[in-house]
Length: 284
Image 1 (cartoon, rainbow, N blue to C red):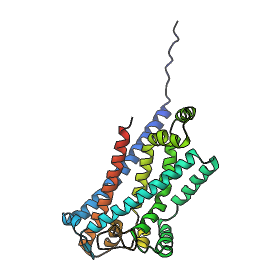
Image 2 (tube, one colour; image 1 turned 90 degrees about the horizontal axis):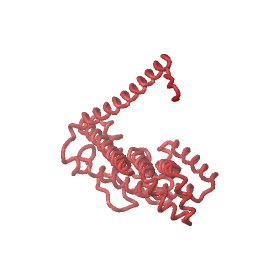
Image 3 (cartoon, helix red, strand yellow; image 1 turned 90 degrees about the vertical axis):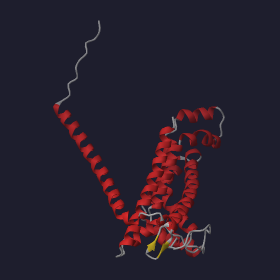
Image 4 (tube, helix red, strand yellow; image 1 turned 135 degrees about the vertical axis):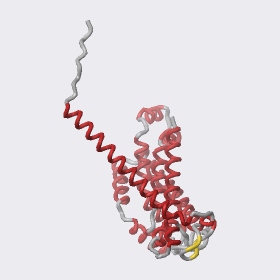
């Protein structure tokens, strides 16, 4: 004799509460998308007068010209930052996951939380005193890149450690049973399974670094010339300086360049984030 199926009746209050929460969630999502579209529309509309090929092929000259030097300088600083923060951040998280005791891991997370809350201008002061003055590098790409590395390092460390935590315990136990060393376990198992989380942290760190202005004012300064491969004693241009400085000028051409610089930053960061997410979706 089969047991009878009892119909579960949902209370009208629960139905009403569920509908209200769905409504609130939908409204919150709509507001977020509306704000994003408003930002894009404002930036695109303001940059329309500057839309020309010469913007990408002409360096800045005073408050006019193009953005070639700022674009190349931003890419140069971003490359230095992502290389430094990737090596240091992943190495720190790997040490915490495979070698360090629990209290060291917790201490690293605590320090990361503190660093992520420090104002960016403080990193600019520290970078200026340490790299520009004490080390004698002057305003340079290396000073700016290391300063941005200090600023964005907590995001890579925390995301990488969280990615390592998501690796199934069975995989680590199987590696240990097979006699894998800790280094081989990291290289062969933990890193491949954590690539998506590591990439997410790197993209977040790069986004934070590329959107900063205050630290670069004290370490990179500004230059109307194109960047070269000199790591020290050579000022570097960057897009956020154009956004911060040119938007305050009473000249429409300068304002248009500021909006164009902001649009380029949004497009580059969005493209990197999309590529990372697309790559993560391809992984089984």
